[in-house]
Amino acid sequence: MTKEEIYDEQIAPLMIEIIKVCRENNIANICSFSLDNNVACTTCMTEDAFDPPEKFKKCVRILYG
Image 1: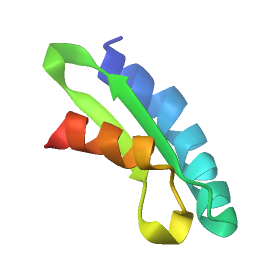
Image 2: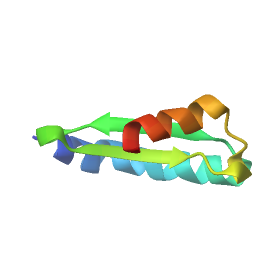
Image 3: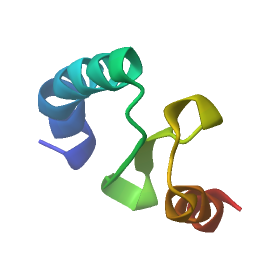
Image 4: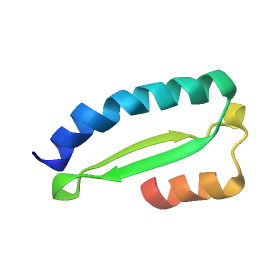
């Protein structure tokens, strides 16, 4: 199996639940996975509504410019 297939089958279902809990409770987060061929999958909840620390916002700027 490729890393992407593993992500799709095993991690993505867990992420759906994590995202749901974070949204319901306004929990800021950054979660990033490095998959095959320099492909990355990242979830960021760093909008003001989640009251993220400034270092989370800085991290997203570093990851995505």
